[in-house]
Length: 508
Image 1: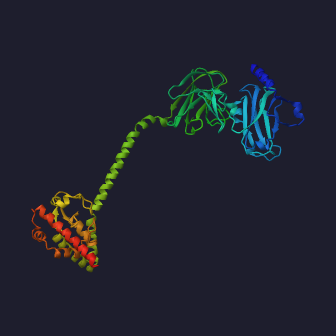
Image 2: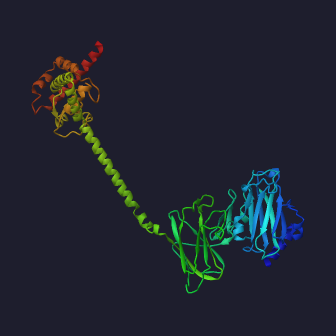
Image 3: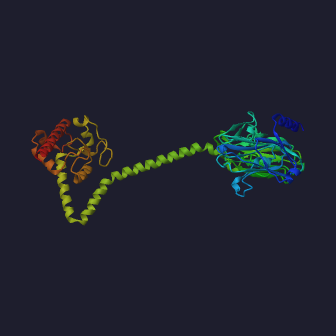
């Protein structure tokens, strides 16, 4: 009664127009047109209809219709509040009918419907229907208010700064801690995985919520009576994902449901994946629980990880092990691939030799030509680029002055200290077989492309009158040669080779 008295004083102070909708008014068949922004209405009949017509200049605005009840009180307002566009013209569709589902299911003393901009013109009419579904209360008293704003209006302005903050971009209230519902009008108790709630006294209806963590995919909600000796079968729990449309879980809208049915406890496994992160309110959407009872009851509520998540912590502790094992496997596979590549490259020379041999069987002319060319090249190579140990080659001064080759550039195999190699006039080192097979195809140095064809080699030998070179031709099979003599030999040979190449270019 005190609330009703305050409500009446507020109406008088604001000088709001009064409307009385009774049986006599209803018999006239008149539909009242709402021109002003707000009216005080006393409705003593079950159903009444109003209408309003927006102006053309209001097309870019949000039109909000609010019902603020003075009687009956919150939780007892049992009405259906709807707005239909062009209802009397029979041109409306399902998309032109708007409801306040939140106010209807929760029987709230504040209800609101909002119409988006650019969805109407000045010829459209919006009909407001208010249907009383419970005749237990008579003479419903409420204020009907119509506002036009550039931004979205949050339900009931989100209560106050203590209960919530309004985001006009989407018309959603960011409720403060322990406040829930679309207008942050309900106090709720937070639930935690660590601490169950015991000895919770439920008189009629209480609200709870759980704010998920991104690492928890699902949980199990346990609800039970503290004293199972008492026969209580009317305790029910409605569980809902926060969706900013319905507000709170109720008997008309819920995602999960628990009813005792003469049992002392019940549980339900809940998937938390639909609770996404909301960028406006900067938190995950909540899991909302409404517990109702017809008679007072003492209950407990607890949350636990579902059986599928029982090993969550253990799995997280094994993540590092899995990563290390994966890295080790990847390194092993990479090492095997490198070994295979090197093996294939090392056997390439032998494969090419076998290929040449096989092709010689099929073509006798090619056999003779290749054989003669191979013999001739071998003789020239032995005369001009004799076989030496790799360690001996490294003692030559010209080789020491440059970057030493540690691997054959043809087969890519590293040199051993006592392996047999050949040194070209251009001071490059190769395996004898690798160089011979290369010259058969290309007749030049594999690295610098200096000509190493038969003509160039023969001309170099014929024109080379240097005594050091002749001495080396007679003593090239001796194992203990002087390193300085080898250096002079290859230096003179290189000089002669360059002169031959220069003369060849001038003659052309």
